[in-house]
Amino acid sequence: MRTRVKICGITRLEDALAAIDAGADALGFVFYPPSPRSVEPAVVEAIIKQLPPFITTVALFVNESPEQVRAVLDQTGIDLLQFHGDESPEYCNQFERPYFKALRMSPDIDVVVETERFATARAVLLDAYRAGVPGGTGEAFDWDRIPTDLNKPLILAGGLDQSNVNQAIGQVKPYAVDVSGGVEAAKGLKDCSKIISFMNEVSRAN
Image (cartoon, rainbow, N blue to C red; front, side, top):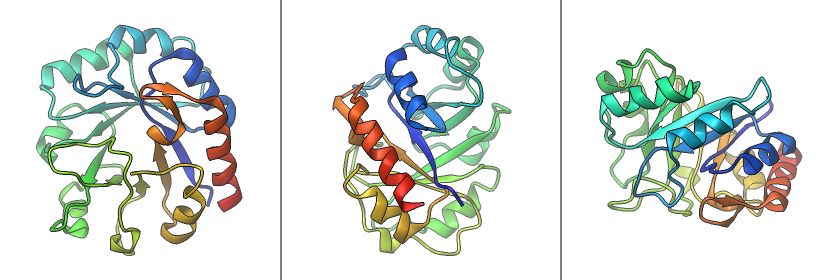
């Protein structure tokens, strides 16, 4: 099966179109103000209006208020929700929108148990763990820790770039990979050549 690709941390229309041209399946927009990749809903609304069809748009939140999540959904019409904090299954379910849950690979996490806990999630995303940082660390984790018997599609994140995504796909065989910093010129600004190189490595792995 072909590995899907989400390019996260999109802040500009030109980066979104470059990702699509290179073959990305999904675009991620960060609605977490402390992040250097955070973007205003009005900017995302303008970007989405200019995208071609058949591209999934994803909103990333970290422990956000339900009111703010709904406000972003109403303004942008985004397709899919990504919860990257300490949200409960009950919290995630309330928006009546497809979602997936990010799990940070802390030393004591039981990925199987957490995946079963989020039974209504469309997928789980596994990311590197650093205390106090909800994601976007640019760090990889030990892929040998990933269970092989998860009952949901797996999205692999954490420190991926053109140098290691081929190996990651071969070893983990994820449904999708999620990249942000690995295809950037600077935080929040994508590098077209890095996107193309990353997508070429994904294709080679497939």
